[in-house]
Amino acid sequence: MAHRALVVGAGNAGNAHAEALKSIGVDVVGPVSGTATVADLAPLRDPTVDVVHVTTANDLHPPLVREALRVGKHVICEKPLAGDLEGAEKLAEFAKLSGRQTTICQNYRFLPLVAELASRVGAGDLGLVHLARGAFLQDWLLLGSDDNWRLDTSRGGVSRTAADIGVHWIDLVETITGRHVESVVAQLGYLHGRKTEDHAGLLIRFAGGLQGACILSQASAGRRNEVELSLDGTAGSATWLSERRDELWLGVRDRSPQIVRRSGVRSSAARELAQRPASADEGRRNLLAAFYASLDGTPSPVPLPTFDDGLRHVRFAEAVIVSARHRAWVDIADMTTAIGQVPS
Image 1 (cartoon, rainbow, N blue to C red):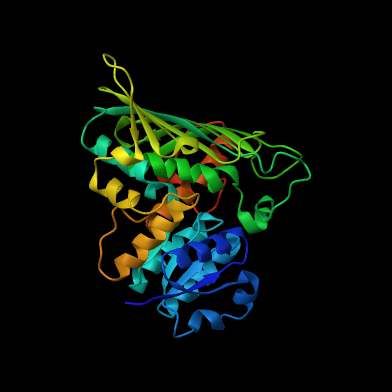
Image 2: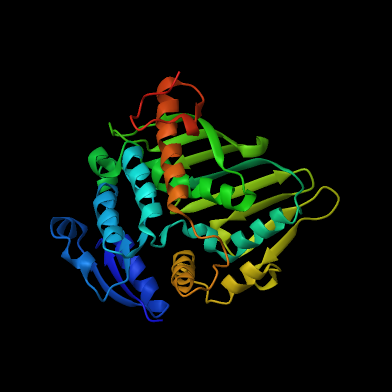
């Protein structure tokens, strides 16, 4: 059936959503201002719209998502799900009660070679995966003169780098290995007197004994948007780099490394994703295409991110802040809605 989307949020993310929707043939209203829509919620009640995209600053996610679900719309929300844990908990619960379909924009899992790696890990090609290592590096907030709403804790939340890009890396590990994050110990760096972290060094524990180590930065000169994920298992290792997104490096001890390319993927999910043209924003486009197809009963080639995933990732980001503050490991499950309180 035909669908019509309302994109709320007129910044870079909103424009990217609108362009991606047009590329897959979905009728689009907007992008419209998030601030104006919170002040007057009437656009969310448009009877010709059946899906609402929330692409605003984090503090506006709760009122917009809540009202969209209340009036019966399906919702696609940018990550993080909310700027604080209480807001994320309420949205996850409200989504369950609404009966509507929801997803959160974890776009990297919808790239063909990421889907291929998930399939190969699931098939046991790497053996038992025991270590995840990597980084997510950007430079757009390197200078003291650089500015963005994410620097304002009242709009973005108490975590920036972990909440903005760290959750992408965590989602990649979780999606590919099937093991959720359980605990973290973190050291953080702050530049230019800012109140939110500019870089982070993380040690992470995932379910099943999987260990992780990750470096995050939004102040690494020359690094535009670079993701690295390496997985080490008892039978082999793998590396995926966003700068070479259509290649997957596979290594074993007794043979030369293998490079799997977009044209040579073997899994059905990766082949389906690779059928669409490659583009700079194909992860977002593929996620949106899968979500709209799911509304019509077609299964997604890759599991769609859920609001429960989004809630867990907000817990992770806040645990990073608490860990650095207390210089201690913090269990994700122990996080409370009042940040800074670590249960005894």
